[in-house]
Length: 306
Length: 187
Image (tube, rainbow over all chains, first blue to last red; front, side):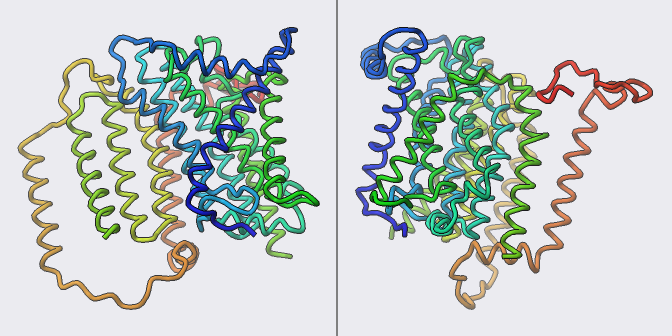
């Protein structure tokens, strides 16, 4: 059973997310160091954090500072708020009756946030990156919503604890594999990570990240990592049975499953090349959406005849 | 007490950011001021304990306003507010219309004998909403969906400058469409 935690769990949540994000960043940098043939580089994120904290902010001409900073904070807030309904073992900060919709609304903040960061700097590269993210949003958001709806449909409830409870006998990943795969793809896209990193692509010198420096860059990167963590963590109650598992306590299973999904998402970045947006767009609309419709139909039919 | 404060915060916030839409020069700022106004309005819906509708308004408005920002910046002559430009047109006419509408609506609010509450709100408003949409209001929603979809298809057909004859040739017999940008399916 999942229930709402005490008030201080809301204070604890950002700390847990930051810990996961830091661990993921460390894994990413040690993979990068290994690929480059160097020694273990797991401390690199800590050094970057220190460096960015003391670095002076770079200014651009006629930047829209309000929207720029607003976008940075919005991404961070969206990433943290998305995890408000994610159960950690037996407790979630808030077990809302419309938990799935809440998660969706919080991660959609990334649409506005990334575009604003791209726009605010008054730099062509940033702007191109921001517009790329909007185009990417048009590709990933509908399949993503169908994936969320399919899991909610399987449990016949929008409440996350009901979804976890519905997986007692069989995890949703077993009979909704397409929804799980599409969910992972859309998480990578919304954190513009891995094969979907075109909004921050190297061909546009970092895109939305191009003009970010100092604390701004630190907060924005943290927001991006936390969004990735929140997405990975929500996959656990949606498809992987939440905290269910033998021997170990429920919270530990939540941690282990989240870590496994997150590690896969971090690892996949180095295994897959960047997908160009016009290709992703067509694949999303011509393949992923029909696949999700069929998957949702299948789940609905199973529920009706069961 | 908290309800009252939250309501007035949302109400004042919605009106304030709504005014800001017409006071700022930059299209990006105007769009996101409008988004802030919608989010404050969603706050009042949440105060009615209509959680689903309130969160849905936030969700939809963020996506809609980001799409709108793209179009606002595409069509406006001064997207970034670097050159002075007025957001208001036909000032006298719009002032008259706005004042008239305000007076009319206020009069209606004050003069209509409002009925007292009859019955209780449902225990789960989300379920009640779903049952209404899929039950008694089904026909309306189906027609609405069809009209919206037809509008979308029609506007895309009208707006695109490339039709199937451009893609597949005059006899529609080309094996592969002649597209300037190839999509991901290698068709």
